[in-house]
Image 1 (cartoon, rainbow over the protein chains, first blue to last red):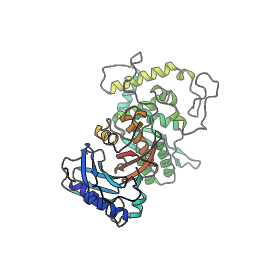
Image 2: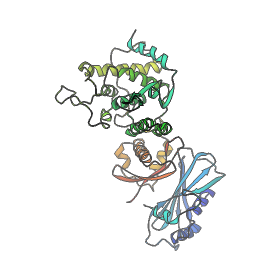
Image 3: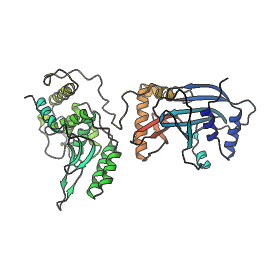
Image 4: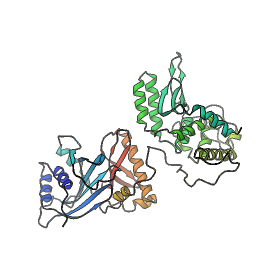
Length: 132
Length: 308
């Protein structure tokens, strides 16, 4: 079974790091998720997840996208961005993308940061959720 | 000496004056090998005054230089730069020119600009646009109240003029447009190392790489869209584009449409950092995420339809 890469782990932990209940529930899902498949597209990747039966889902089973985390990555002059898809209340897919640069074959070092800077406004992030 | 050769001889004398970006000089708003997009005038008190008083000429010049009509946004920035220069805000004026994001005017473009300037002494901007297969509507969106040839005045009545005397009809015939097209084609071949010694007498076959007449130039873009990027955006099963691509005929055209709409939105919103924006295209609402490089180039990271 495939495992999360170090980059994926770090991005998910940063995306789901919040006090709001929605982040708490999704973070618990993250702790038990399994990687279904991963595809490198040449300019990024998408990794699909599954959540074990019985794992608590978000109330109302919403589906949405969000991604306020960016990365400085060795080999990518302009860095990278990420988007997380939550489907029917569960973590579904993480997408990473470069800005027209070839995705590095190996990523050894990276530095993640929030779009808003060091202070993250959880309410604003939740408001930015895009219905899927 | 053939007219084309004479022009090229004059070009040799100008080629050293390099202005790869728009710049305001004592002569006016300059680009390329010293070509003036707008000439410096004087106000009623004799002070220098700069303005894009002949927009159709500027539009035709830029379209010829870049082989594609420019986005109206470029003209807006040029106007703003002139206004600021006239109130002595010279630095701000040049900042607005930089924000026009007009691609680098290299030697080929500078030559095309130079020749277009010479041609516009004998033909109208409309004729020059038509000769290159460009939609003359791009000349009309800026000054709807501009002078026109009265309706009923032969075939080209209603056509916009450059505000002065109406160009003699002989310059506006289809034959003249064809001859102009032929000349421009010869010029292109000459600059690319063709063996033509003088303009061919007959029009060459239609260009295989003819630019779409309705697609304005918005920014410097790579000649080939990265197929990996197309795959990343359009082949992800979680990006439900449906028949979006088929509306545009190809993934390249669909991506181009997204890129154009995104560039426009980013500039209108003055975004200079990583962005997430909504655009509407082909009856669908899309989310586009990307970034803006320090030189103003808008990059797309990903895009997907969203459920409103």
